[in-house]
Length: 140
Image (cartoon, rainbow, N blue to C red; front, side):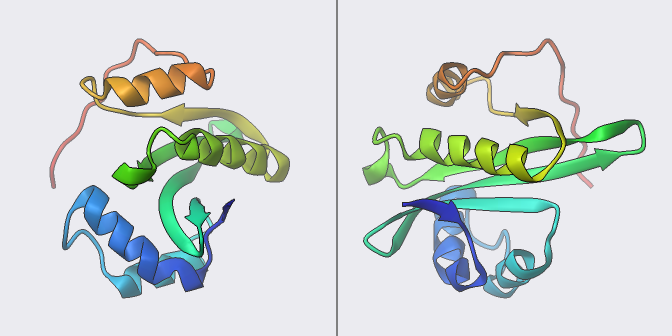
């Protein structure tokens, strides 16, 4: 089942996030708080037999420069044993449908690594196009 995450999912999302992003990136309490209070993020989950097997995070970005909201898919993760079963594409499609029905959107964006060919193939198959932009980042 594909659905929006809720505060009761925090423990399972914490475990999944540790597998995806590594340990000590966040705490269970921070995830619970974010699920309850972060109105700029939508979290979609994939669930099989009451166990979460993946998640997608969407950041809703606003600016005085634009009247519409930008939606950025910032995280896409599915447990290894559940990959190639369309969970990622179903979660992204759910996120797109949910966000376009609830917000005035300008577009969806996804960033991924140059080496992540499987993700790039998925995003192209879902209608996303490569942009000629360069991402700059600075560690603080």
